[in-house]
Length: 311
Image 1 (cartoon, rainbow, N blue to C red):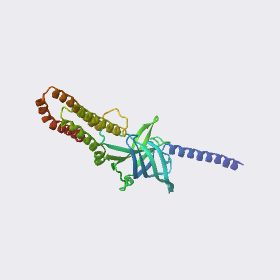
Image 2: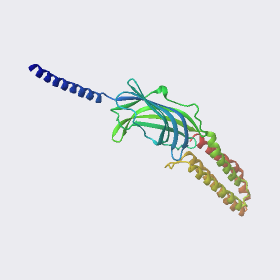
Image 3: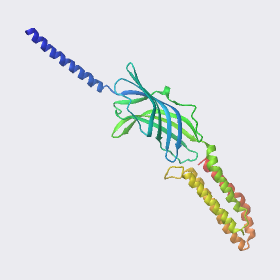
Image 4: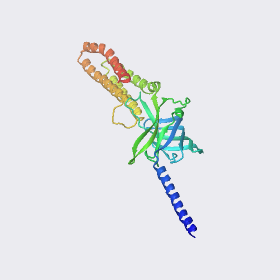
């Protein structure tokens, strides 16, 4: 009887000890530190780069892997408006959890257009875990798999990899680990020349014909000046409609302001020259015209060259 009682009591203590050990193991596991998730992206396509709406579309492979514990699969594309998985695979190798996916999505990034049309932009994919904060889970970049395809081509932009990094950011009242994949794009100069510089220079070349119209032809001079001014305004509005609303002047804005000023200067000279003609001051007209025909076009092209290259 005593032996049976001893066995029963011993069993109770043994079960209690097991429960305490399990509780201790779970507690240690929950406080064991940060789950490390290795992450990498390989970009295979980028298109529909929309400067005005500051959006772009990317297609890429993404890989994640982590040791069993806190799950690293609850990822959020922080700057995406829409994403879809072309394929998604999740599997386990021993204690290693793996995810492989091909993703297509529309993303948003800040476009700095101060130097437009010779601007460079940085397009980003930003990823974070929506379950675990920074004390529980951090990303580690698997640099060996980071890259972009050599097959990527865009008619308007040069594209190259900038960097891939993991950072700590304060989001929604807590710190989280954030993975950031960045691509740098640069606008092609030939596209800029064909769409902006060449049309503007043609309009201004026509406006400079006012320097060669006889001063008595005031109607022709003013008509040419107004037509050139309206053409410049229309071209400027066409270009501005492709840009986001910003509170600063872009390089192309300054270029058009200079063009407005020179066109106005030509119209003023038409009126002033006509008054000289009416007052029979032909010698003054000839002297002014002799210098104006050279100085006005040359100074305009030098100023625009400075704006385009050095400003």
